[in-house]
Image (cartoon, rainbow, N blue to C red; front, side, top):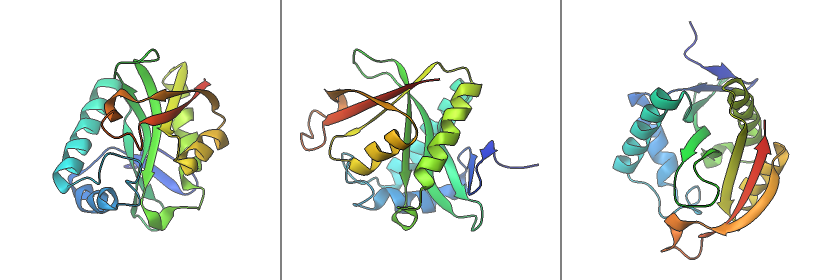
Length: 176
């Protein structure tokens, strides 16, 4: 029996396991990977995120999944769906997002994985998915375009008001 909920030619998507903590902590501690977040994550922050994702999966049937490279069996990071409830005129909503280690950048893995997550969302009968990124995060915005999302608007993320360098965000969406 496969440990994967679904796969692509190169990626396997699964729920989080305790053995992911070390590798995911290294990704989350990298200042370049975390450039458009409030700060790099500590091991404790990473553990808390993994636990939140497990609860989200149990409650909703989706989360930002642990993603392995099928050929090497290495954890590349996370790609998946999240439930966003911060105060905004477009929440609550289902968000698609990704965070992968630098070793895996510029190989089309985020786009490949995000397309698979949109297919998963369609199977879950989620009618619309959004994605958001700081307006300076051109790589993530490019992924949004590659997976067929359309620009909706710019907004100031309320959870980032104390981080003016990243608080202005672009919002994209797609109807499924």
